[in-house]
Image (cartoon, rainbow, N blue to C red; front, side, top):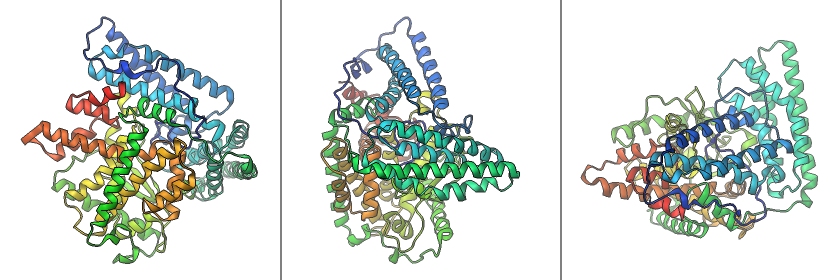
Length: 588
């Protein structure tokens, strides 16, 4: 399940443009690494210029994407939506491309290692932004971009009590007022909408009412009558606009292209220049097949292979209602923390806030069937985090509901401690701003998935237990995700082929499989991050142990690994082992 990481602007729903060759501009990574690093006279000035440029970029980005800022815990522009006008798009794109050219031209390959790393990271952040506007072009093709702006525009004001209810309600009123015009602009922008994304946007739009009518109105209880009436009027107009947007999208469905893959060239460009990953699409796909075969076989080697398929009926205690379910879910966290402390598996910082389990808003269900993690934002003053789980139903066939009833600890380990909640909280405390702002999904998801199996291998779960079976199934279907992501986005598979693969190879029910395939289609490369990141961490673990020898301690490896933030593992390998081999492979 993916966490929401606000600083990454182009990991949400996107449309994939027609395949294009890599740009003619010299954007080779070959300059990222040099065999020697001679000092240059003006290096200090150049490094200072890079850091100033990065700080100015983050400030510019935060103001230009106010909903993302609210989600990240920066509430300066809570009364605004993003400007999606064609002129503003062009202005933003031109600004980022100019910055990217300037960063590419810097002599970063000659700088000391730590400064060189920051140069590479900031360049990758700009490449991510540029790729979204140059290749994905969501504004022209993906209606989810605009429905998501409405959903997150309100959700980001509700999820934490960062200000008085009245102030948040007034901000919501202003955002609601802007939604009809924003959606009208969206219809002008959507010249080539994709049918798959349109269907997902329609489903989200038609599930948005509870968020606006129930959740939002908790802020309005003490508003004076005039402000209450203004909020209700703006809300109703926004809902009418959202429903009308969905209705008109539905009428256009027959004329839409089913799906538009980005193609292998663009996919590999992203792996190399944004993720700094020393693998191409074929190597990633091969890794997925190898890991799928391994975990499928490990399921079969269980004394009772049926344990890999969660079954609520096997549970001794089936919660009677949603509140009991969420309370039971949270209650298992403390025993996991005690186990990790007893076995000295990781240092848990004192500054961690509360980690809560909450019900998934219906508007997010189409692309997040298993829920999602909302960690503390990079600007958050409130250190708490949330994991949103689907609506409870003891008869549900949803994999995540069945798993959580039988034993929620594997999912808790992924989403909470030692997983996303703890790792991202640590990343938020980095003093280096470029590294603090970096949200490499391969590291983030790789660490969380690694943590699931690490807890099993170190003895938290007994042999032939439901939790052990669940760990194997979770890695099995994450392995299946790789085949879906690579083959969808390089144009080899249809959406239905992706769904069938999740069901047959991944062992998922159809509801979960359809949601997983939709998520893969909407967020290219996100689904490869789990197994690829875990594989990189396992590789690094073995090499780290060889290097440290008799002084090796697993908990120290974990601390050394996650103290660097959410950085590409090719970079982390360089930091921990003083070995640039992986990043040199990217540079070739």
